[in-house]
Length: 327
Image (cartoon, rainbow, N blue to C red; front, side, top):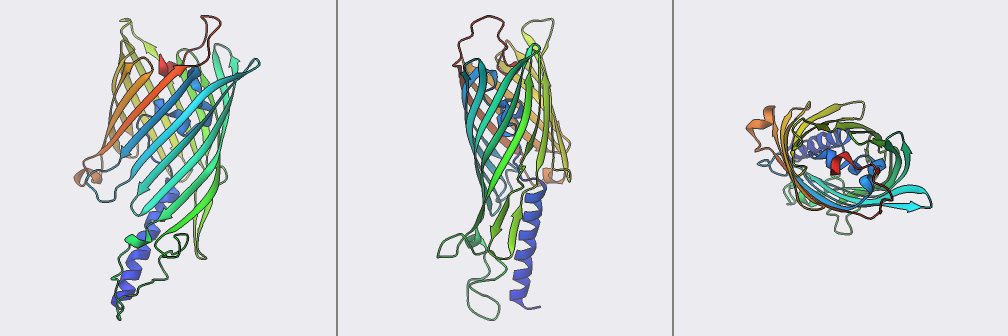
């Protein structure tokens, strides 16, 4: 096998491995999932009757070249039409992993019903995914001799313009979910990528995104010392080919300071910190340390979360339900 064939085989193998990872777990990880639920469950949009602007930035496996890096932006708000309650929002994600970049934009809507001493919401999101591959970052030698070619047919070469330096594909996406919030607990089930978007890269490369189910819930446990609360929560994520469960225990002091630990069955331990800086302004930080072979190669993952919310619905009575997550 000549040098050109070896290089082509290596590039193709790396691309196939990346595509397998994309299909197995397309969505980025969220350490502070209990505060960012509309990122994976549209029924939670406008939850707590708060207009909210939030952002997060996550750097996975620091110390490893081209490790995943994810940025999220979201805006949501509740609103009332007559006697019915609703929520709506928009969210944008830029997720870079290796030579791949996934960008997504969604519109979210939730219809809310008062049931028992809580609120049930049914939600849906609609949007687009755009997955691109940095072809110009693939180095096949760059020369014209018996071992190198300027243009290799095994590397995608569409969607990047006339210069042929990028490959990208776009797909329509949809998700749906239900969410229930009561004074002392919350729970939700959602299904993302219902349409299983197919993104075409030329004539012979197709990326398919598998549907993913999320199950999440949490409890607000008031201790005898009224200054302290325990906030246990969990989130299950699966595409029915792979499974991951995130278990978290937070302690909250004076409804302002939060700290705790988490464990992911995929193989990591989390340290979570959070604080309400001023009324409505929250900041959170997560450090995730891999508990597997990546521990020797990586300095762990870092996630920073910032959110500001304020009440836009004036309650007419003092029995109004308040979100467990925004006490």
